[in-house]
Image (cartoon, rainbow, N blue to C red; front, side, top):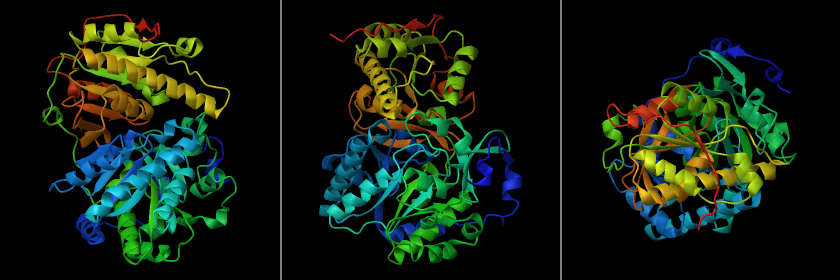
Length: 507
């Protein structure tokens, strides 16, 4: 066990960084040159839609037929489009077999769509910055699909969960989560490590890889790119990667934007020398790998460019149950007491086993949207299954119900905006609530976090759609986003009490 994994181990950033040199400034133009020289498109298989929150002007797909990829590649001909495509495979909501199959299918169809245009592809597996998800299953599935299509498998899998904008950093091989202004906590001690489906014990990334591989790898098999190496510069990183082989895991320290850019440039240099690397990363490293600048959050006016707002109010859907989401929901309701609030009773839904898109809730939301904003949320008392698979099935069931309610609402009225809080919730509301197959990531609504999409087609076209990860932002973040997207002077509807779901079956 890493010493920092001992119970109640806390530290401050200055304490952790004291043993390392300062970050080496990296010119983004150097990364841009390396990206252009690679002459390829990065296809990001995202295990839930929140991976888009660090990028902008990128096509995003919730369906991955060859025609969908053809559309996405066509968008890259535009001058402002980044050389990447996000594919929302939403595998964090699936069992292992289904998750693997979805990755294989997306890779095969991407390659099939790229072949006629002779577009070279690279792949990345985007996942949670707090280490929840199907690992190493998803990188394995991508490698298998590449081999099946006649391509070389990755020489190494690069673990880069760092997401500095959200307070997730890796130092000394240990991954940390911000727990205050300067304090950080090893991720293995947080609520995220106790996830009922994807739980783990190790904060040390090498130990985490060993733990998740069920003994397939030993700790000596995991290469660690420590912060002193990363801050030596891209050439040193490329040299350290030069002999990686057999899909070995590589854990990388990163604490700042310059660290991420240095790592990205080192990886691009290594790949130019013939190495193939598959990132398994949080959102920030994807931005570095496509040499995209961090942009300021969108203003309210920018968020509605190209949009056609409908009803007076917006729809906020909260499915995530992590502590920060519950606090944000409570803060939103506490500070805006007139906000119409509609509760989906999860215990009743699970016990009854019936109902798709409760009609009573949908009708109530439509009524209140004529006056102002409405929040639809799942009840906050956790309901889990007897094992990881059972807990995942319940989460899947709840998310499906929320999406079906959203679909009923969209069929009746066009909200001014839609916000979805939580990864699985965001994916389902986009794909099934708004029937969105293709969209463009416009940018973020808070610094480096919270993504805004505009659908290219379907009933959700013209409705600003916000993908809000469950585990990011301070307690007031949800309220800030609601205010940003609300009409001037409008943040809530007429007072109402929460309405429990009757979970009636759809006719």
